[in-house]
Length: 357
Image 1 (spheres, rainbow, N blue to C red):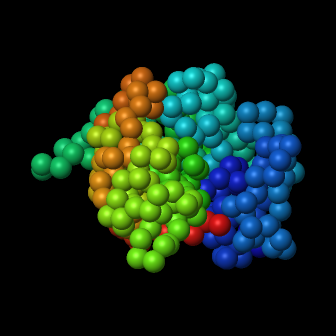
Image 2: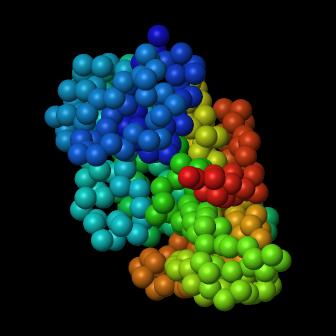
């Protein structure tokens, strides 16, 4: 039975990856930072599985990392732990670097000294490209050959780790792969990321509206307010419920589903040689287009512009306007292709947040 160590086990990607590996017959050890409250909700499907266990650890603590790798000697290590919010990295650059750059270094050192047969996956990011892109005819995109131009402390730290993996691969023979993953979302996405922020707002709005709705014959009212005609229902809701506050709506992102992307992570470590791969759908949509698609699944608001407020505090100090990945190498070498398209991704996220009790 293969053993896998996953950092960031409590996050979106960690939970999907753990489920995938257990399904494939692995024994999975999930590394979790100590917390006074439980954050294992995403792991409910596997938390009691006999081939799954949680170990306490901190990726920014070298001694902890060395000890875990030495004691477990995993066949595969997936480093998904990160300070993963770009905006936060401007406010907490030192902490971001400790986790996102030094953490991977500690794992590479641990593999070199204690477990050279362990295969290592590092979660790189499309944010490393920043403002750079490659032209293919009239389409601009990012691929493995596109130069990096990070625009945030988060992206700089990830770029640091990306190059460290390459160096340890070339200098010490570490089987290290970097997955340059473009934006990947799901029903398990954290609530402070813009996609989930949008779908969560929609779910909360619809539940709030339904909880206040009273029927008086063929008329509608709220909490015994004056009876109002059905056609004014949306207007009253829009005026009363807190607005959805967002930043730059004109940023374009390549959005895929996290469950698809963790399959690519696994495939990289099954490949016959360690390489780096862009994982993306090859399509880019603006946040405006995400809003259009998300609000199209509910009829409670005719125009999302009525409920969205552009708040300058959600703008980044240095914006990345356009990210669109080319997954051609992953398709050819790994046989990987995304299965969930943009519309199905948004529909699933909205549906999930509409059904939250």
